View 1 (cartoon, one colour):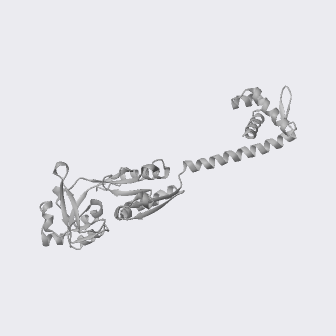
View 2 (cartoon, rainbow, N blue to C red):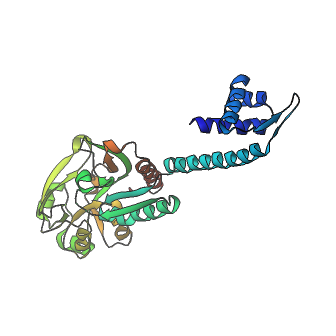
View 3 (cartoon, rainbow, N blue to C red):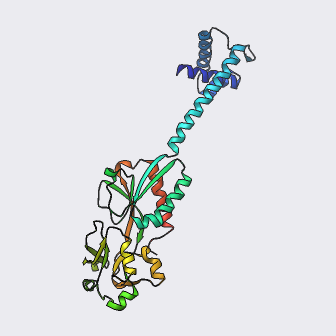
Length: 300
């Protein structure tokens, strides 16, 4: 470091024209600057500066040394900036998991736009309807519907979505409309369950009027999109997020049931491990998702 400091002092003396001007710029005493130039000249055994009472000029050796010093100091500054850019611009692989419907329709397009802007980040997106273990499976972020239950994870709400019960007009014509959630026990239900089991619980109502109904389905899948296909084929009733069936409802291919008992909206959250809070690539990706999904509500 001593040699670098001496180079910096020497370059400033040459650029500023006098020892005193260089001293003021560097925040040093003029005597300190003078001593460092003298130490350089003693070490090299040659004069670097030709000084008179009115001016100073470079000797031939001084000019050679000055040119090399400038080159070295410029390279050092460039190296520091290159390292700082790595700190300022996040990079690396971001591993993300999301449920199939929201992942395919909403998250995948946003991921594409994100990497177009942040070219140093690569995203590995896994669409999976099961609840993954972030730590065990090496994911950085998981997108999930519902409330945070794991205290070791940090959640960021992305959006809220309505839940509706739907069936095809043909099914309703054959079996009629259920008048209350309890009537669903008399109806064929087709359901999503992460473990594929036939029995699930559906929630209805809000606040003090919340009801939980145990559904014994005739068809179940661990793929969250299959119940919509079954409902479209008139096989039964299913409960889905509004945005998953909005197109089918607009086209009249499905109709809503039990509207008076519509449950509270559920949040979609981005989860990451508490230990990764300081990760810049995770932070800017979540900030990006929050802003983008606020502009594209899931409740409509």
